[in-house]
Amino acid sequence: MDKPTRSSIERLTRRARRLLEQEFREQLEGEYDILLDGSVGMAPGAHLSEGQRIAWEKLVSAVAHKRASGLRSAEAVAALLREMAFQTLNRFVALKMLEARELVKECVSQGANSGGFKEFAALAPGLVALPDAGYRLYIETIFDELGQEVGVLFDRRDVASLLWPRRQALHELLDVLNDTELAGVWGEDETIGWVYQYFNGDDERSQMRAESQAPRNSRELAVRNQFFTPRYVVQFLTDNTLGRTWFEMTRGETRLAHLDYLVKPVEEDDAQPVERVRKDPRDLRVLDPACGSGHFLLYAFDLLVTIYREGWQAETAPASEATGRTLREDYPTQDALHRAIPKLIVEHNLHGVDIDPRAAQIASLALWMRAQRAYRELGVRRADRPPIARTHVVVAESMPGDRELVEQFASTLKPPVLGELFRGMVEEMRLAGELGSLLKIEQALESVVRRTAEAHRQGRLFSAPMEGRDFWDTADQRILDALARFAEDAAGGTGVHRRLFAEDAAQGVAFVELMRKRFDVVLMNPPFGAGSLAAKKALTQSYPRTKNDLYAAFVERGIQLLHPRGMLGAITSRTGFFLSSFQKWREEILLKEAPPVVFADLGYGVLDSAMVEVAAYCLRKEEGLGVSTKNTVRRGA
Image 1 (cartoon, helix red, strand yellow):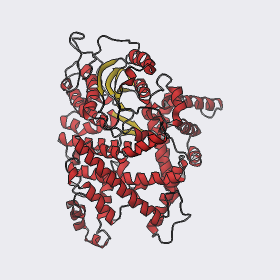
Image 2 (tube, one colour):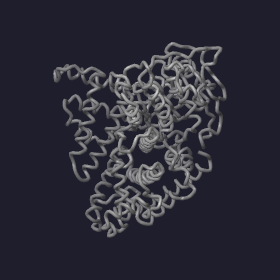
Image 3 (cartoon, helix red, strand yellow):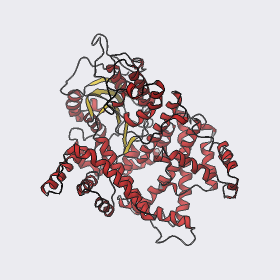
Image 4 (cartoon, one colour):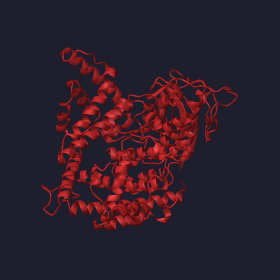
């Protein structure tokens, strides 16, 4: 996507944000007595309708939930306002992108004159009696249909759905999205990622840096590091990690041998490709530990389609760890395979973590849309496409801060050891929003499990042994099931608070579950610079060799999360390769634990507006390996 096109997206994203924040601010203050200074009315105003009174209770509960997480009252209202604007913009951007892919009928490109709405109105002529002739009802019907799969964005139980742009604001929003400047962007997978990046402007980042050298909280850390990875860098890193992994597993007999950026071993050093034990495609795991809008995951999806097709065609193939059968045994015909591939990739192969819930939302949506495109390319009709119920894109954030609800929920868990485990999770996750994937939660929780199990054995409360991973393998799902029941077992405003609590807690459990896995490939454009002030001590304790810069710590952590001989691809500042302060990182981590396989010195001007010189490189985890003359290192590739 060229610079003028990105500039158009940036300009119109900022315009849409100003429009929606102004609109929702007027509604919050003028109708619901929820003020930007954090003041909230003691009771719903007498002027509110019955439906608005219910909305008031939910909005007040949402503000209280944010305060419980540690925000001041004014910050809680500002965060709610920002989230509602972002959610609304994302939904309408998504509809434009879905129109371009013919996954929904025309619904927003012509506003109330869109073909899909005309068909809808013709089936229900009574809609003309509604203030907007039923257009909101029509759009919300689409949201409900999409929410069956893409609940992360279109679930109308979300508090961000409570407010709807009034007539003039809605018309102005549609005018922004239907501007001819943007006519060519809606078919591009990366468009919604650029909307995500530009929602927060350079002026906001500059102000944050002027006020504090280090990020003061997790939001500042996320906003300061929103730099979209260029497509060619994504390809270079993915081709030389995931592509190289499959190249080695097939001994070079793959179409991936012809990838644009794959750097093959140079002939004089290694005439034969490195051999690697072959895996069933379903057992290949890819992680982006700071995934943003999912750019790496989207391109990895492209390679995995080829990997699945070649894995199915192979005369001899290993059985999957997941099913105990080969891919062809599970999908005996090519048509059956094609119906399965997109869902398998999303639900088995691709994993992402981010500290920004908005980023995880965007990445999940982008993967779902990429899966729908794959279905179309594989010739699978809409009616024959299996639903994709979930992605493995999770939010790293602290568990719920409401101590009363923590205790209330923990007391419902049976056996009680699960309640103690949950309390331990809440405590260990307190810095998740500051550290993200750097939080070694799987190690901390295994220690909690061991201590808890030992305490209960000594008290003779349980006869069954509960050791480490064996216990956790059942405990996580039992906690998730209990959270779902806990959220449903309430009504009204209190029910909203409990549902928000349960959703946050479920994200925490999912994060722990993900961090317990090990991966074949880790790809990243990690944050750089100092960590947040709140996490400084924890970062120093956990990463004494790489504490001086977040990107170095992310590389160290990424190597830890790899299987032996797994591969890591990263674009980071190039300073680590020559500054003396990174000597331990170079000597003790890169050269000993994961030597470079390919290296490209890219310099300035790569990460959009970030004024930093960068390098892109791929490492292979090989324990005990020092510098190898067989590594292919190319400068300026």
